[in-house]
Length: 287
Image 1: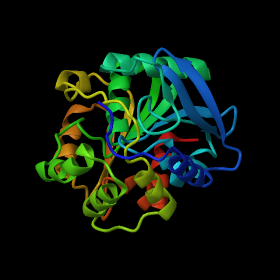
Image 2: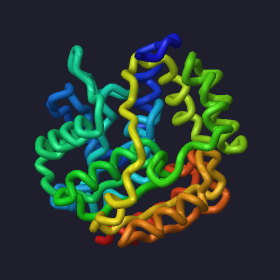
Image 3: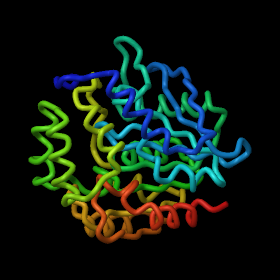
Image 4: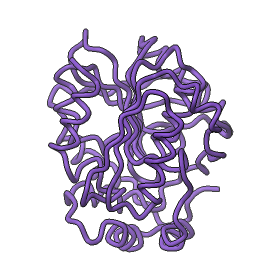
């Protein structure tokens, strides 16, 4: 079921380009074929750098949401940031074909990495992108060297009821006003980059497919994850119980480093504290 709000493609494309202009100047875009359609990937960083795949959150996040970290991470890594297939962005799903299961998402990412010539990657994701990244690391462990998760949803704890209630109007009938009001509530009125905020508003009503959802990974699966994991949580997140997430992850993952960034909300995390977040990520990923 796609979104039912009004969608202006020209407005979305213009807003997307304005945020992408904040990426390194040498950034290039490539389009790779997958069983589920054409995947649009923003790429930058040294050609011989270790591959780093970045997955955005759900909704209208798009790969552009990594703009605050791209320059720092691209100093040492070859960044690959895809727009999720079937979600707002420039990826184009195949007619009548979309990912419907976690196994489908694994197939999609396998195809993306194969086309990019990246057999093994460092992998990171925010929010829903963290959920995808964790499932991929569990199902394709030979392809993931290190894994970082930024306030991942539905991985270690469920959503807070208040979060779902505030999100419901936006999900039922997405409009720019509802997107803006929801973000203002979740972030406590934090100031966003105006270009990024316009992109979120422009994505309202994007003709996207229903996202793949499913249960949280089992405790047994999490205990068997051998990759090193960096779990960075938003101290002011209204999405879930931050301390419960930290406790459960710490008790299940064998190789996890966890930190809670104070005074940062869930939706602001990738770009509200760029220096703090960047130091964490570069320190974890290494040169």
